[in-house]
Length: 115
Length: 221
Figure 1 (spheres, each protein chain N blue to C red):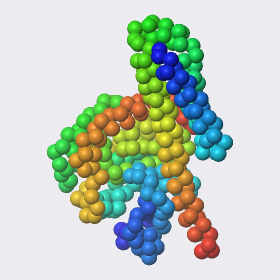
Figure 2: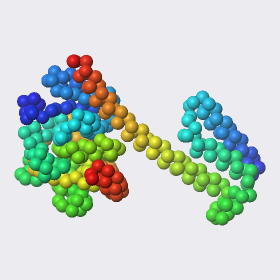
Figure 3: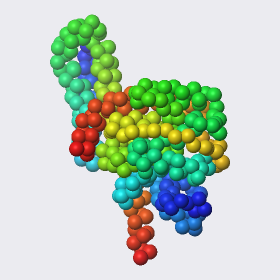
Figure 4: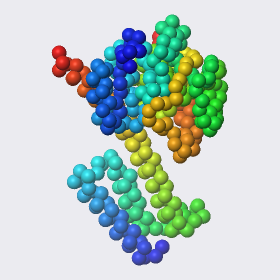
């Protein structure tokens, strides 16, 4: 891999990591949601450092090292979207449950007030 | 509404609508449960089942507010439950003399799903998309304590309650064409609907074992 590319990857990884830490401190991200993002930033940092290992892995799958990065990134994003989808479904169910319970409780309060 | 009341409790579930549903219903002395936000097409389902569960009702009947269903048909779908012939009764448009005609494409869709459900149930079931359904205590219990997740179409309801060990039958009822509002299936939805429905059915089939194992054993000694 090109030296410049290595440096870019390293810097990006570190900046990314710091941004995540900053957001967690400001409570804009929760640690449990950002685990995958932290893993991504580690990958970005590790790739240029253990370059030869990475290139060997790429050769094992018969692709160029650059393409392996794309494959890894796409795989990562797919996993993350799946994770987010499952969270959305859960939230959706919870919200519906809450709306219905709120409606029932509102009615009960009204009945109590009448008495 | 009140004129045709046969001594049932009426509950109107107002799904966050902007019109005066609530005021009109309260003027008529009908109990209204109103959602503060619109919770989709199937959000009302949770509310009335939870309400029924909380207040220990024996039978719940879903009744659309668009004038499609007739109050005088109510005893027809409630009597089988009263006589303990079934746990869930579907008011069917296609059994008996035909008063309801739907479009060709829709009949194909309904035919497809009725075919699939009939294969799974091992007996014929015709009108799978009918919104005129009655449930007994067993199903109320099932859906308000065990299966709390979202339900997207009636097929799913039928399948899940069938897996929970309920007996589902179909009785012929009369229905009007809708007087107010519009169908929720426009052309785009009706293109997506069959695929969505198929996935819903597959999803239910995946749950079959779990439901049989968990629910049937826990709540039915």
